[in-house]
Image (tube, rainbow, N blue to C red; front, side):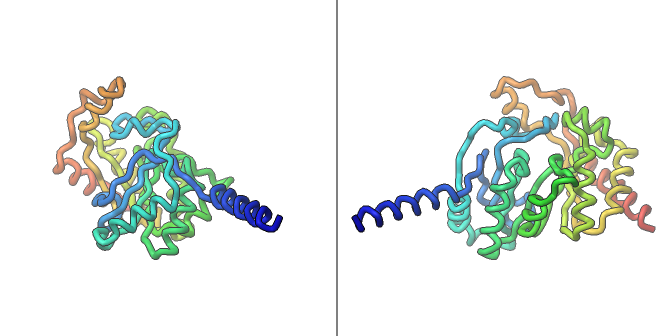
Length: 265
């Protein structure tokens, strides 16, 4: 009887441990990323995104259907396997939209901080709602840096570009600033869409109101995702838009920075 009781307790403990393990629906993992935060990064791409950005280079990440089911422990084991190469870096979770799996990201970052790993959240912030912040507040406790993607500063144009409003995104930026959360701003400059001095100036004026912006990444639009759209049987909305040159991206960044400086002077 004692042996059966011990076996029952062991089985119950095993079931509890398995239940407590949190899994993410993962699109892919990049072990040595160099453009997703400071230093060399271990980058986790989550599956699922509510936006439909016309230049998205991972349209296969939009669906919330199950891709790769990976636990927090498994990801950190993979991280440990390459940590010697992650100089001055850490762990970045991007997407897709990682806030669609906020419980998973929260658990991952909490465990990562226990191992003194630098954590970065790359998000559009589109799911932010100031009325319900308990989970985002908990996540931010374990987040060293938020990389916030602002797709378009104009709400009407943002809806055309992504299918969704930018109201929550801009409010999330304000919320991060109010709560002293370090952030990097990312902005893709697309010819004839965001490559417009009026919009770039308006973006700079908005960024000037934020006190915790540490960096501004202005990224030139490219069309390298076209083959992926074709393989998925999807129409690429910007097929007639030429890639932006590096010089044009630098000019756009200068316009944004000048607007920030002028707004603060």
